[in-house]
Image (cartoon, rainbow, N blue to C red; front, top):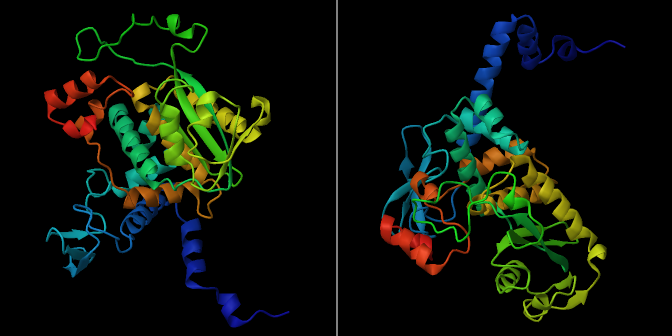
Length: 350
């Protein structure tokens, strides 16, 4: 069988591939780096039209010319200021290039350790940690509400972790400091924090810190906010669950028969265990990271490309200074107010 002239010659891409094959190794590496940067910049600038003003939240806006790079800008009818697709965004407010954030997204998608991530991205260990905090915040904002008609809900516990020297700080620890590897591993749940987890038959899940134990009032706050209004819930029969479901149908099963939520607990503890002790005040960020992985693991797009797309269009509120002033969960009101009065960030105590 004779091939046509078109198939014998091949397209322009075949010629480019042939040239790449004949390149030396050093030139191939330079070309790969240039392609990676070009892809990152293209994905970072490919955001669509926003749905509201990023500054005031007003949904009324009109087109208002283009910037120096040719990207569309809009004029807000509410505050009267112009904005672009990346205004107040994660990449737009960062000094790092888009290629660095793309490499960081690949490391986050694979849940790599922080030191290995810093080495791959080419930043310091502290910068890599701060990048992780920002991306976790973007992940939390990207989480979709849990969907489903039947949920299983149960709590799991993590060791209390409040690292740092609190002897001269504003924070009252309320107990003697733990010696590394000794006092924190005692039996019982007295020194643990409760994470309430729920999962539906469709695989949608939520994981959130609850104030106190499973018998505390924090369970009702989490359940009423996270569970859909028209769903049935299966639990292990704790008394606090019956009064925290807001009239939803409730089924009691033995704990070992809650297979979906038990499997979720196992995956969650394996994920958190990679990071060798997460501080309580950062734990909710890591829970959002885990839920993001669970929610988008069946996405048609690759997890790395999807996370970078969320980075490119994501926004954050917690700045570098506010990240350090982030309070421990479920502090007393006196401690929360002392933070706001000392540093002028009263929005943190709400």
